[in-house]
Length: 228
Image 1 (cartoon, rainbow, N blue to C red):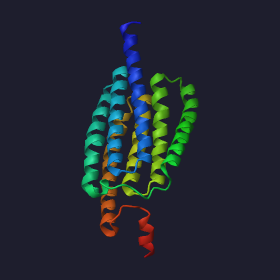
Image 2: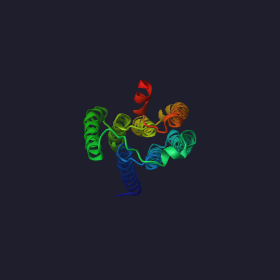
Image 3: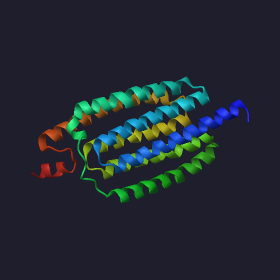
Image 4: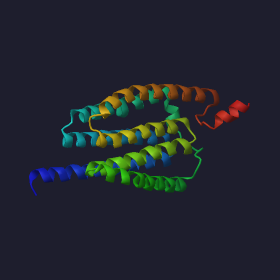
């Protein structure tokens, strides 16, 4: 095995490891009830997205993917968590959610089923496109993370974990996108970074307002508040 083959093998193994950890973060976001831990998982997942972009950028010799990695670190690892903490407040992150719709074992089983479904959906697409080894890792994992993020929004009862679920959906979409179209994610990332920051700020301010009025950020409490 020559040097180029060894390098390619190393890149694929590192990307597969990154993908596995990325998916585990999605499972953690839907199951862990400590909000500060959920935020840290989102930060780690975003960092893994940047790592995958660097690995693919090196393989494809794509400057776009290196820029995507830099933007991801700036916006998702540092800026978004900072904006979220400032707008929502530390008190919301220091507590443990107790209003989750399903228990943790059921949630994890359904997340596993969603992952299997994502791989089932991705299979024909990968075959039809004649996908390479990077696409075979990133596409199904990205789809699974996107779907689990959507599931997180429905199963969590607090505003902050729901917002993190939305952000995890965006991470999943980009994790798949960087392998399918290495040059496209730069434009999409620039646009998404702006809209995501605005979304985080608006929802964060709303969550802070809810917490100020009813001393909680549980979305379900809004129904009772409306009835009153």
